[in-house]
Amino acid sequence: MKKILVLLLVVFSTSVLAACSSSKSPLLISKYYEAISGGNNAIEIYNTSSKSVKLSDYKLEIHINGFSDNLITIPLSGEIKGNDYFVISRDSASNQDLIDISDMQSEDLVFNGNDPVLLKKGKTTIDAIGTPGFNADFGTNLALVRKVDQMKARKTFVYSDFVMYHAESFQLLKTTEGILLEEELLKGPKLTQADYDKPFVDPNDANLGGGGVIEVTLASTGDGDTANFRIEDNIVSGELIIIPFGVHRVRFYYIDTPEVIPGQEKPFGKPASLFTSNILNGTKIELQSIEGQALKDTFGRYLFNVWVDGNLVSHFVIKNGLSKAASDYVQQYRSVLYYGFLKNAEHYAEANGFALHGEVDPCWNYETNKLKPGTCYYDLTFR
Image 1 (tube, helix red, strand yellow):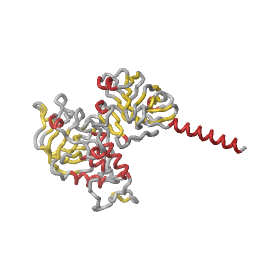
Image 2 (tube, one colour):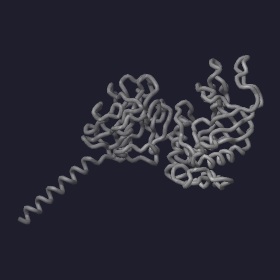
Image 3 (tube, one colour):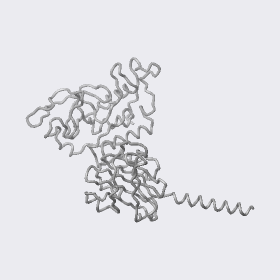
């Protein structure tokens, strides 16, 4: 009887170990491309081990609009060498660089930013981009590139493992060269000579920004996302004066801080106002229009990026937990979308529990749900 029990235990243990080892995998999804045009979708898989892995047991599973009952399955073939990459692209791809670097093409690699993509070995999920069961936009018109310090597969998608790059940053495929490190991301985007060379107003539509930059002076501050700036010279397009010289109210692009308007105050509205006012005491202030976007919002305020001493104010505000990032896929620096920098800063603030993400507003009375009367102290140290 004892021999039979021992034999059964050995067989059971061997079966469990075999099942566990069969589900383990050194593979992960390292890059995701949802291209703007031309069918240039792509998925890059990376082998974290030093040994080659055959792909015959693997597949990509695309959940259309997040639904598990509307699937596209793509069986994989070939193999990935140790510490190497494997790129799958759509067979209708038009970008020659993508075509040349692809290891496999499929007519079924059809997804947009709300279609989760799973890497599976048999029935087991190895890694995921997006969350099945949720029809949420996580990757429209952009590339999601895994951070080099987050090279581990997850069955549940973690957005902060990735950074948003321009949708056709195909130069990043099969390499880590050009991928920004966390310390570089936390410094935020920077202006380049190309930005200064652009017109401030779109020459073909005077209602739109051209992406250019002008220097201004601070007239007065408002809440955390609004201030008044003095423009010294008329901004013209052709012979038309588009923005006359003088003081103009500007709403900061990418952020929406809590209100400080009397009767509409919210927690951290006052700290956000104090924080932004402190930043605007810098030496050099520049405004940047948003290329192809309206110069004004529905309230008649100008919508610009505000830069102080070469730093994007919105990035500072988000990094310190005083606003979430508003989406935009137009501007980029070193192939990273501005929104990618800002979303990464938001993840940083969340992880550290800054301001709106976990701290107590020293200016707010939580019992009366009102702003405390008089002055209040808020630590204005940049984090």
